[in-house]
Amino acid sequence: MKIVYENESYYEKKWKDHNGQGLSYKSSEFESCAFDRVNFTGTQFLSTNFLDCKFENCNFSNVSLIGSRFANCSFTDSKLNGVNFSAMREVSECKFETCSMSYAIMADLKMPLMEFGECKLLEVDFSRSNLSGCIFRECNLSGCQFSRADLREADFRTSINIQMNPTDVKIKKAKFSAAEALNLLSAFDIELD
Image (tube, rainbow, N blue to C red; front, side):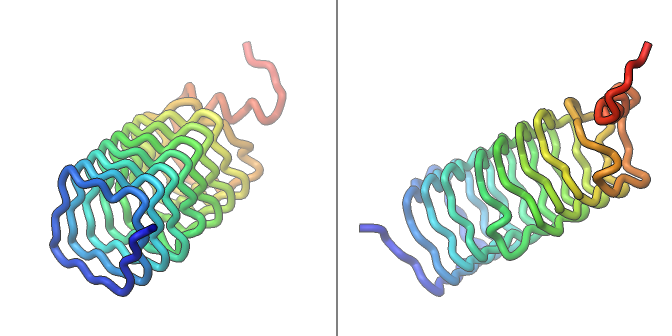
């Protein structure tokens, strides 16, 4: 039987080495909370808000975030592989450091000014998202989808394996290293010597 927490509020609470696996939170709020080595595998967060929270070494495998919100949260050394962020109501002003986020779905979201540092972002779907001003620092972006995304003023200078069709995205004033900027030309099927 799944344990359900509904309409709960947590303020400045800390969880460490906690197994939150398979729990369900509905219409709950976590504000200024800290999570260290928490296993959220299979947990459901329905219409749940996380405000100013910190997550370190947490596992979000197979998490459901329908109608939920992450605002001004930080994630460090955490696993968010395959998480469907697109089901969320909002993801704003979050920072991800040394996280594994491969196969995540971040399509159709407004996420300007987000920061991704040293993250593994393989095959992430950023289609149609607003990523203007985002910083991708030392990230591996192999296989990511950016179709019709807004990448204006985004900083990709230290990231690798960037592939996108520059005619299919808003890219004005985005920053790339010279080597990665050449990858943008692959969409045009041209040969360079």
